[in-house]
Length: 264
Ligand SMILES: O=C(O)CCC(=O)C(=O)O
Image (cartoon, rainbow, N blue to C red; front, side, top):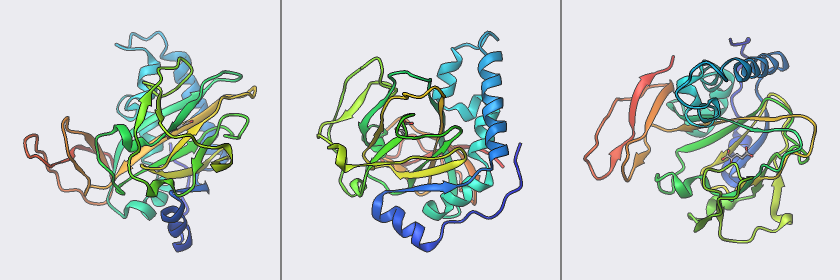
């Protein structure tokens, strides 16, 4: 389901702020009605898919390539109001790399340690990837919104270590091996229907949800067709907008990403 779409392109000053700071927020993108409809649909899936014989638990699909399994995730990631925003960073040719629902239940200790996404994606230090984080419920300091370290995307990949903390929402509890002072964190609070963007080298994380409401984030990673992947395995990405030449190569030392399906 898509609501009416008014062009949502970033202004030149907004683009400049993204490249200067490494993040941009809040960006109003999705209407209250559409956000509620998506939240309702997600929560219906959470109720109805629990027991329907999926090969793996629903929680896995919510976190790993949700857009391949859950039509709602695809609908959100391909929504023109979000793609307009992403175009301001990547240009008109946009591939969808991954989608996940990152949910913190009320009054839980789940958090995300400070990290750089590109530290463990095997894509090198690139500009051609951007994360759009859509709030389907208020993301506040109290509910565990993201914290960003302004301009940290200008550093290279910094060493990380795995903490395997049971409360960490990252698979291995990846954490940057530098201390980040509280005063260096910018609180990326978002209202329902608002987006933030962040660069793949941005140092970011988030605290626990101490409120009585769910914190529901849809984390969508978009990639430019120009991105090359320096090592195996090949990645898969789906065309969302613009033109993409299909290039599949498993053997070249600097292979292009492997693009397998057209979304629109
Ligand atoms: O949702 C969160 O709290 C963290 C999300 C995150 O780490 C990311 O989008 O890369």
